[in-house]
Image (cartoon, rainbow, N blue to C red; front, side, top):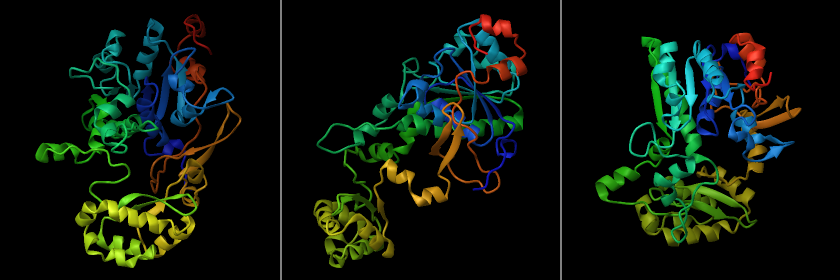
Amino acid sequence: MNTVPYYERSLAGIRVVELASLIAGPMIGMMLGDHGAEVVKVEQPGAGDGLRGWGNRKNGVGLYHKMLNRNKRSVTADLRTPLGVEIVRRLVQDADVVIESFRPGTLESWGLGFDDLAAINPGIVLVRISGYGQTGPNSSRPGFGTLAEASTGFAYANGYADRPPLLPSFAVADTTTGLSGAFLTLAALRERDRTGRGQVVDLAIYETLLTMLGPHVLDYDQLGLVQERTGSRLPIVSPRNAFRTRDEKWVAISAGSQSIFERLCEALDIPVVGHDPRFASNLLRRENIDVLEDTLQQAFLGFDQAEILARLEVHQAAAGPICSVADVYNDPHLRARGSIVGVHDEELGCELHMQNAIGLLSRTPAHIDAPGPALGADNREILLGRLGFAADELIAGGLAL
């Protein structure tokens, strides 16, 4: 896989100060860091980012932190103290971006609001991540990804009709916020490069997920429709579901077009079903979905997973295995594309394999240089060497060197 040193990557020269914690804000920093931005993560002395204590650990070290805070530097500062505020102010002097995820008004109470930061550096872009945004009647409420998944309509439409609404088993709202946040950060930097002026990116955790729901809002606006829970079915495409095979494994299919549906039936040795008048269009298949899925399920039970996947590939039908993370980890295609990569971790003394940066750039690909750092690993280099603090000043402030 082609790699380039960090100083030749797409975002080389961009400096980011990350005041955010947990998932959404740090994911923005992760994505910028993957492409060569220098990301200095400012953490609370002693405890650090709460994500360090989330999820599974190895030798007492949080693995989620190792992934999400990769390619970052770690310094410690208590923003509730004058020393902590001064550390941030000095970091901002030559920074391009500040990412924060405190409740609205918190930065201002510390003298670190946008006006304060812009007085130091007029080109600074302040990316503000919060549950409900900086404005509106709910802006002061604490907000988390789970609440966004509930309040956007996602959980209401997710799951089976005869069961309760289903929240996702991983951080969907937070991670999608990270994706949008990285894009909005680059949009603001592009505008800054034209004008020399920074601005605020105000991103609520619910917003990206609301957009990802697709036509739900428009369907309600124009037709009064509320999408109910449909399990693995997709109301606009039929058939689309997961089917069990003879060896107790699962295959996912999506056959919205007539030609793909007919090829699916050929692969399943039920060609007559592909030409049944009840299933002659996507609309008709939706109207007769129960009998169609019963027929398909019986056909799938005649094959082991590997056998039917091979047949589906020959017939060029849109289908694939439902994989566990163990299957994903060992997938030869993902390995060939570098979608999972290994990187040595000094703290744990071993190689860690994790998801790579999203997508491939032909000349300046992203690269993972190191997993998430130990807390305060860069205090001496950055606070002493770059920012010019005295060692006794930092030690008196409770910072380890």
